[in-house]
Amino acid sequence: MTKKKRDRASAPGGFLALPKLLMEQRDFRELSPSALKVLMVLGSQYNGRNNGNLAATHSMMDVWGGMAKATLAKSLRELQDRNLISKTRENRRGREGARCALFALTWHTIDDCPGKDLDVVPSIIPLRRLSQA
Image 1 (tube, rainbow, N blue to C red):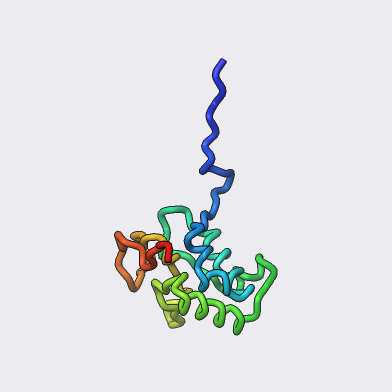
Image 2: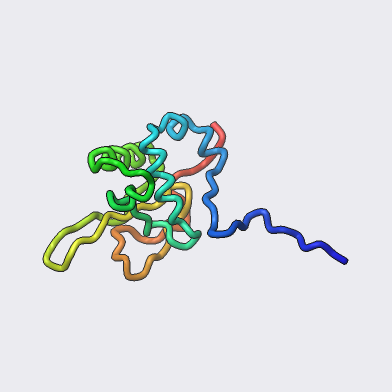
């Protein structure tokens, strides 16, 4: 009788892989706790095909223990300043309704997200190069 080989890369509900090269970099290690929490919220939505269609709204943060709107805005700015996320669509309010800002994880390529009206085009190279240095 043969044993089934377990796929180490699969987990029920998916998973978020943070490359060690990323985690070893100073800008990641020195993230504020709030920014790290927001990064986890964004990363929890990533499924391997939707980078660029990740959101972190005030109501989404309620599920993660809550966060003040100003803290969320500051955390998103910190993640962008440290080149850990990139804004792929601006938020907008208007007669047509509201839409939230969307983001991409910079160590992955930006995916084609049909119907999301992204302000950026899909990429074949990640915005952030991970290398030892």
